[in-house]
Length: 304
Image 1 (cartoon, rainbow, N blue to C red):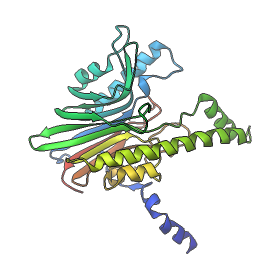
Image 2 (image 1 turned 120 degrees about the horizontal axis):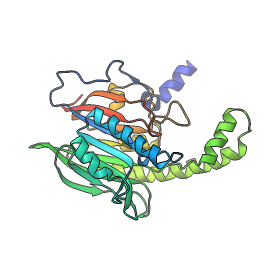
Image 3 (image 1 turned 60 degrees about the horizontal axis):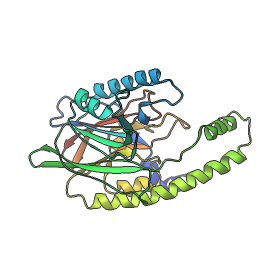
Image 4 (image 1 turned 90 degrees about the horizontal axis):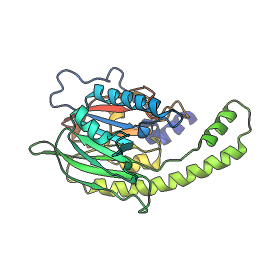
C-alpha cells in the first residue's frame, strides 16, 4: 500500500516517463494528409575530437540521415552554417538537397562569416516569424517560431528551441567516469556538477515561463520541437507542455532516450502538438552521429 501510495502521489511525473505503444513507429498507409516533423540537435555537424576531414564526412552522414526521413518540417538545434568558401553553407545545402525552400534562422552567434543557433526549415511557405528573447538579452540559448501555411486556411505555428545547457566540461565527464569505475569518491566532482545543475535549472525555469507565455498568445495550432536539456519530470517540461500533447507519449514506446551520453535513460528532446492535431507515429533514430538522437513524428489534422 505504501508503494502504491507513492506511485499515485507521483503519477503526474511517472506518466510522463513511459510510453506504451509498441509497433507505432511508422505511419499507416492510410494516414491521409500526414506530414513529417523532425527535430535534431546536430552539435554543429562536428565532433570536436576529430579532424576537419573526419567532420566533413560526419556532416555528410548527418545530412543523409535527415534526407532519408523526408521531413516536411525540420527543426535543428546547435546548427552551424558558414559563408566562407572553404566551409559549408548548411542553410542553402539543406534547403536545396531536402526540398525545404523556406527557413528561419536565429543566427545567435556570428563571427567571421560563421553563424550558429537554431533553425527551422519548411516545405510549406512561411508567412511570418520571430525570435523569442529568453531571459537576459545575452542569453546563449534560443527559441524561434514561424507561421507555416500547409494549405489555404491551414496555418500552423512551429516553435523550435534550445534551453539552457548544463555545460559539463570534458573534465567533469572524466570525473563522473572515475566515480562510475569506483576510482574516486566523487565528492569534489559532485559539488562542481551540482552547482552547474542548479544554475541551469534556474535559468530553464525562467525560459520555460517566457515560452509558456508565447504559446498562450498563439492564434494557430502549435507544433513545438526542441532540446530542453531537461527530463520529463522537470518544471520546464510541464510548464512548456501545458495543454500540448507529447508525441512520444502518444505513439512512442519505453523510456524514449534521446541523449547518447552520461545516462542510458535521458529523454531531453521533444515534439509537442496542440490537441487539435493527431500524432500518427513517432520514432527515435538511435544512430550516434551527434550526442543527441533525432526524433520524428507523423502528424495529421484532427484531435487524438
